[in-house]
Amino acid sequence: MAGKIRELKKIQNRKKILDAATIQFKTRGFANTSVADIMNSSKLGVGTFYNYFNSKEEVLMSIVRELFMQVEEKLMAQKNSSSLELLEFCAMNTAQLIEENRFILPLLASAVKHSDKPEQLPKNLSPDFKKIFEEIIQRGQERGEIRSDIPKNLISEMFHSIYQAAAFSKLQIPFQENIRLKLKILLDGIKND
Image (tube, rainbow, N blue to C red; front, top):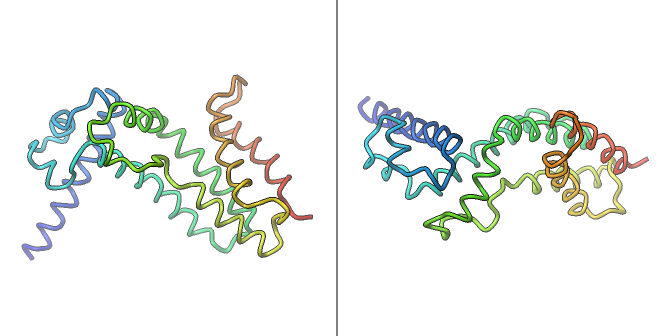
């Protein structure tokens, strides 16, 4: 019984730290947030931080991984859909995740620039959405749902670029709608007729 209580407390403390870090990173930025700021916000002692994480870089990567897993979990629930439906579902869920967590993209850029421990940051800081898209595209090409005359990595790269194009768009279209419209053009172009 004591072991279960201890394990539950560990889970709760880790979540408190991640939630506090998310708030601090969002309001103060990565460079201006210290481990002490995170722990003061979490109402836990600074020493407790090191029971769960080695650095604030590791905390940031944990936040990013959790966001990525949310998209993967939603996608798994749609596994019986066609490849084109999966691509649309994945792209729109990713758009929603990005819009709801807009602070995360600048944080990743800031982490690279201001990190005291750059060796703890992976070479590719963005979640591996490109890999998910490639897997769906490959499956769609194998099933004959998606054109096979275009390499899967090129199509995947196009999906990845939709987010950047929408983020920097000067059009007076909300972010998710901008993604949806660009996505329609892309899906129509890769559909195997």
